Image (cartoon, rainbow, N blue to C red):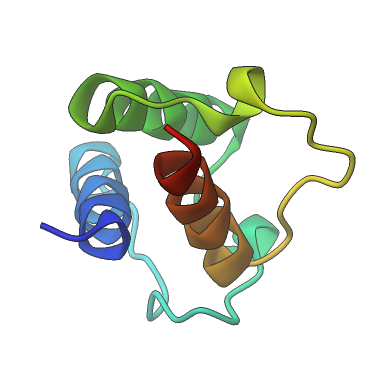
Length: 83
């Protein structure tokens, strides 16, 4: 499974578990408009660390947080390449 597919799958699972109706998960979707709150994002990051074995938020020097879903996915893809 690609990193993008893993991220989207986890977002869909979190949305289903919380009963939230999510917008289409496109690369240009602003994370703040995704329907996920800060707790959901924290759960997402934890699940991705468990499944992918990487946490780009602690393993790199991020100066600007990701704004869109595409940037979030790219952050994980770049971290995976650095491992």
